Image (cartoon, rainbow over all chains, first blue to last red; front, top):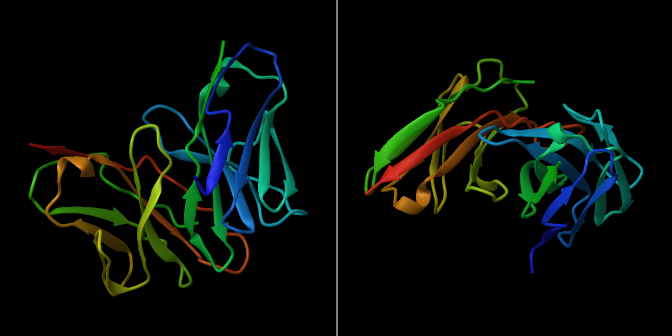
Length: 113
Length: 112
């Protein structure tokens, strides 16, 4: 089983719908991240969390919100999805002792029509 | 945050050594250099990390000159399965916020 699990892996939705992408990890890491990747581009940081009580905006947080329900769970929500949020979304974790080593999930491909 | 600059793409052939250089002129004293590999539709995977001089593991070597303003990822004897995008990142390892920025990376194509 994967250490960092994302659900759903694929989702097609319509403009205006609320969407939640979920991430859970079994690595026991305190830090969790959500990244977005558009075709042919690198990853951009949306939100990150150092622990359950900590939430921080990344490079492109507008239109997104997150919830850290437990140390092992970090959810990303699109309150009202729009077509330019169509992308591949990755969750990642790291240990605070070595935040340079990120462990990524398999990705969630979101299509907004 | 230290910005990194890498070639957009590189081509190689099976069995050759590939060296990908990353520039990071504004690297801070506490920053480490980390390289990731990404295959299509998969999350990036950690390859190697270093602070100065040379680091080697079973996958790659990382060369960092004394001024640390650049680094070179060396992949020995590449195979077709090394075709991927390679990212160079710079940042602190611990203590406070470490916002790891992924640039566009270097797209390596290995040919038969």
